[in-house]
Image (cartoon, rainbow over all chains, first blue to last red; front, top):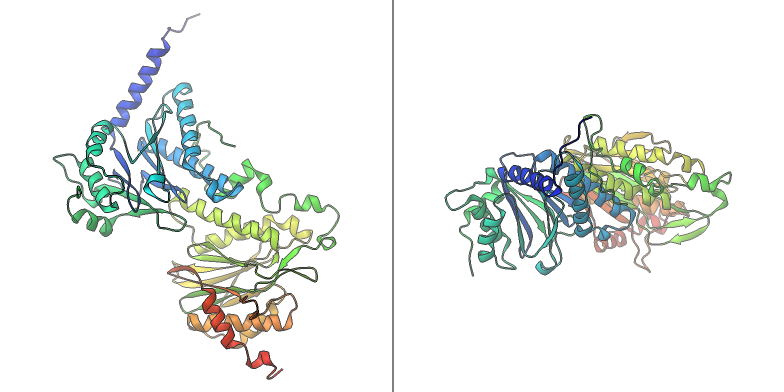
Length: 232
Length: 275
């Protein structure tokens, strides 16, 4: 009878984390920023219908980076739980915090118990009455849940982008300025990104119930053409 | 209630886009009319005064469809509520008007609204109007055991069909049978009177304002003949609920406009001329 090789838990977890991180880093990053009109979410996406940003509930949006089929599973899980909760209690009882915890539990469970971890990072954004009431949750592949203020970045280059974003992001800046800033940081110093390579959505504070809106095509083109972000 | 185990969908078990199915699996006690058939037991609903909604209608016009309902709910011979709403948006492009047992009907509408939105979010695009109408039929059919006890729910469904570019009207029977109406339909205790009025006046290509007026006149006619239908209440300022659905979406017509139209239209036959 053969004995399985002993692998120290530290090594096991490190291997899994490295595996997840490496594969997430191969994909594109995603930025979410709280702006005056609402929360803007911007990512690079070459596909027109395979979305990385979607609506979960009235005031809540979802963003995923990494492996599409894995974050798509999590998106569906979120929509199901949100709709169930809203139906059983009231629409206003659905909040991003409970969903963020659910995602944390799910990803943590997969990270420790399954053959391989999910190669994803998840954003949950909930728009409030003012920018100060906005909530941004960033959930990583191992189930760590982070509650971010103002803006958050997901993906392999997250740290570098977050650093640049930190110096230029202004709380309560205009939505169009925030979109241009996110696009500029995603493109990097040399690159440019056109409307066809981007997926942009906004949780619009002023909309009565379903706040989620995609910004694409001509509308996005106009915003991008309107020039560099103001730094006032 | 949160199940944090990883969602496992395989080719044999994809995530269902039906919220009703999800509710049936996870919380069947929240389904509309759950337990009504069992609770009623051998008694029929006649033994309890359940609240009934009365007259609703849906009429096609040149750019869509108008739905309207009076505001009265009755329990036996009593007026249960003078300001009840019977016309609800189902989603951006369709609406439901309810007649019959008010409790299960309101729950059924709430479930139907979530069902349509859930499908849209999961699938990334909304159902066709035909698909929505079929979904509502299935919900009405699921209510059949309760209907057998007297809690009958028979909605009217109407909406703007984007693929065909016109308004469409559907009615249902208690078994969930779905019938498409060519131009208009009414429902509830005063429905027959409203329907006769519409039948005499309706013609192809009417404008929205003309059909709004027609729906108000039809509801007045129903209130004139049927005790359970509420007429325009000028003293309290209670007027029918009217909504128009077109390519631009579901729009509830503001009460001030309805009040102004109602006050102008009252008179003539209501004052006794020709009766």
